[in-house]
Amino acid sequence: MRRISLAADLGQRRPGRVKLSGDLATFPATDVMQLIASTRRNGLLVISASGCVRGILFVEGTIAWATSNCPGERTNEVLCRLDLADRAASLLRRMERADLFRRHVKKIVAGLVAEEQGTFLLFDSGHLPSPGTGLDTQRLLFSVLASPN
Image (tube, rainbow, N blue to C red):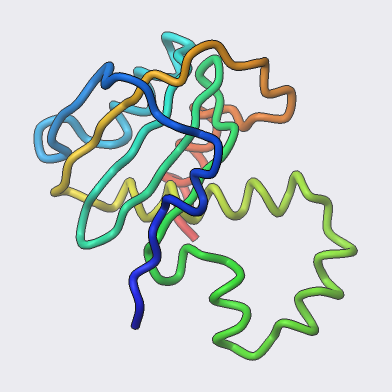
């Protein structure tokens, strides 16, 4: 299976200097995300664990975007692997984008929260406009911890 690079997903989101770094064994992902949310930080959090790399963009402490190269966390690949692309296209037209975004991010965050070993880097992303439709980080974490699926 080919490894997918996050570079394509990052697109125009070029990270700046590292603002925070650490080890998930001593500073769990939930703590990192709660810190970012409670301090209303902007930044790109990149986490490497179990052979996967995940990226989460925070704007004013809310989650504005997320991606992963981890199998099972890339929605379009899962649909194609199960040969459900046509049915998915029909469903996607009926579902609201906000709900799709929430489900996608929840899957990535659930995978991240389950990691006990790995490293993280929080890159400066400069001034970003308010996300408007960003996900409340605390609420999403609570949802993941209550029901990871």
